[in-house]
Amino acid sequence: MFMLQTLATSTTTFVQRAAQMADTFAQEAACTDYPGGFPVEAFERLAEEGFLVAPLRQALGGCGLGIEAASTHDLLRSLKHIGRGNLAVGRVYEGHVNALQLVQTFGTAEQVERYGREVRDRHKLFGVWNAEDAEGLTLVPLGDGCYRLEGAKTFCSGAGYVERPFVNGKLPDGRWQMAIVPMDEVSTRWDRDWWQPMGMRATASYKIDFTGVEIGAKDLIGQPGDYLRQPWLSAGVVRFAAVQLGGAEAIFDLTRQYLQAEQRTEHPYQQERLGQMAIALEAGQLWLRGAADHIAAYDAQFGGSPQVVHPHQAKLLAYANMMRTAIEQICMETMQLCQRSVGTRGLLPSHAIERVIRDLTLYLRQPAYDAAIAGVGAYVLAQTTPADSLW
Image 1 (cartoon, one colour):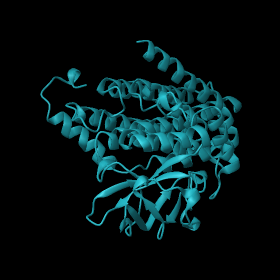
Image 2 (tube, rainbow, N blue to C red):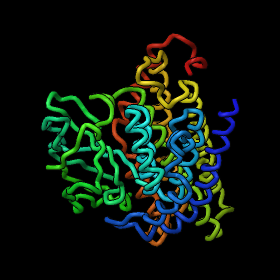
Image 3 (cartoon, rainbow, N blue to C red):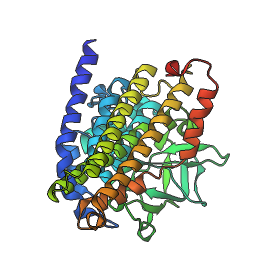
């Protein structure tokens, strides 16, 4: 009980710090809103405030933010605040948290200690670069535990700044293998022109060709197929959904400020729209709480132990997919209400509203949206309990 109280106090501090930094992130966001831009100062501040180390377990110098299931709500609230400040910062930081969860879940004791030391002592930024186009990326065995990479990854968010990304690929037998590439120790080819997006420009999500890079067995994380294991693969959607909810909160705040400045707060239709936005955002807060409670009830560690088959895995996955879907709908509704409220003038590039809507629109296009909803439906159709007892 004492350890739980200590953890709760420690992780709550990060929620407060994230809330305090959000306004600064928002003020700086326009300066890096171009292809090739990156919020360097924001990540320097995150490192100074301990956010890079926080996802490590306490024994490694962190506070277990995210890996200890009891801290999930504080993690989601922290991600929401960071996203409220700048969705690009939230996107890359969420990848750092994801990567450290994977290391601490599937890595060997030596790998956990080594990579933990790189975060703690050298402030290395981690990420997960799993997307690829048709050519894909393969790991070619060279013997003696060495591998050569062939192919490229796309949407490599934080390129040039993320120094320890997961660069996963296919083995000769077709199985998917997790691997971390030390970017500051290898030579790769970047296609910067590939990244010409409408939004999230400051994530520097380039296409990177890793052909010729050689890594060793010490760089492989877990066993083949571990990355695709559940519930870790799908339950993690709650993290990016929390960042997205922060973007919706930013749009609400900016819309309200715009209407106040234009002295249009007494118009009944504007009041109705802001009321609808407030209701939607409060629903989002409840989804964060619900998802965190389900993850905490599932196991003491996020996703449980890879060595144990959990009886409630399908339930957790269905709830995470419900939360992800509901928050996407909340974000879409918030953007639409904002656009109706501020009109054309409020959507010109001189206003932060225009940038946040661009960023959120792109960020919401996460994969497998329809499959997520169908998965929820498949789960509930297999149950016989009343609706109020499903979760």
